[in-house]
Image (cartoon, rainbow, N blue to C red; front, side):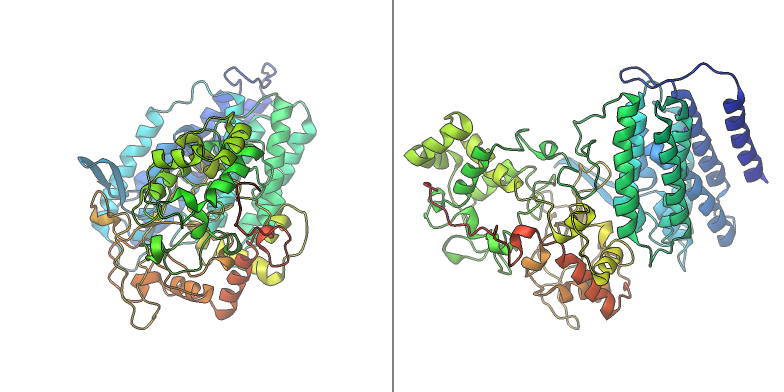
Length: 617
């Protein structure tokens, strides 16, 4: 009964607001939005409704009643989510974060271990066969306090029209890259219906802005598109949903509509963020803002800088023994890996971990498997200083370069003649940043350049982003651990990777991963989520190169990682349950991943570089 009354009130408010005589509203670029009061009222309505149903949940209720109430909580939260994500991102991460312990480390004396108390935690408890009522009680108590706190301490006072448009764009991206993957509905796989709730709120905001459209046909295009999108999501089945068609025909069209709307409203979205506001395709080369991933904010690199970086990348004279370069471990014909289980250092000494691909390395915030560097330029320092790699220091490298007349010529063209360790590192980093072309078969199909994907390849993408759960860690479009919608954080996972390839007698790998340098036990065996782009060219796989084939990798995930094989992996982030993928489904996922090979690495490509250069090239 309460729901019916609440719905009537909302409809009445909207009806009254539409029928009353009001001054004509319009959009503007640099002043507080004239539509803000209505958006704020909708935000409060959806938040109040979330709080209302949440307050009815109690451990004294039957499990069935709590489950029913939780579905109402989730519905109203999902109505609210696009706005919460825009206005209060930190609380968005808290309220609906994954059921995983969070460890925040500032230094050796400031290490925080934060137990999750989110809606995902509630879902996993109340739909479990043996619900933990004590944990449910504490989680509900936290949420019942936090949500009213969020409302009381809101900051929705001076947002401009461009902020509301950014809200819409970020919500669209979040749904495509994370929402429809099942990321935040781990037990129920209710993601499609919840994505429809998100879209209903987008539709409501567009409706609020109806009078702000100068070209009413753009408004009508929005409403038609959103209506169709919501219908498709409401009718969709999680396991069989066509995510490929959804992103291609809905997400990308809506990103184009965001740009048309910005022009119509006379506003310009902020370009100083990782997500490029002008990109109209989730898989276009300009979807992410390369500059925002660069330590020096000199990321694009001129042709001269990239050429110089390529020469430096291949120069073995920059190492102490004069027999090792960056290209020694990163071979172009192997998508800048080396084909070894673990990298080989000076004199062929085996190093600690597998050589990761450098393709798309630019689009992440942490480097090395243990995240010990926070930028490409900094990562280069570690390689130069490592005793088993270059075994040099930056000053020595700088002196080697300064002594070479050919380098002086290249630096004249690239950096106005300034030879410094900073510019040396920047040139190499810019060369690496140039290794992200977004021109694979899959990209070209998503960009409507060609229509060449097979039924199996499309099915593989849909499985990757759905039933198989790959897309909940390998996020589109880079398919690495850079987390949408802000794309400003690189995630790490504990998969329970074994030291041997046996599925019957596995042994847990002893690499500590993120355990060092702070010696936090809860971070042992955690490693950065790498990209699966160009994965067909980069065996063997995992941080220790334990698996030689993609079939083995998929089998590892299918059985539930290390814990699923019976290993004691206390903080494993991968669910230990089987994915129940069939052999045909595994083949389809592999077929999709092979479409992520960039065109320049394809066997018949005339663009394939063999990295062996001289200074005079």
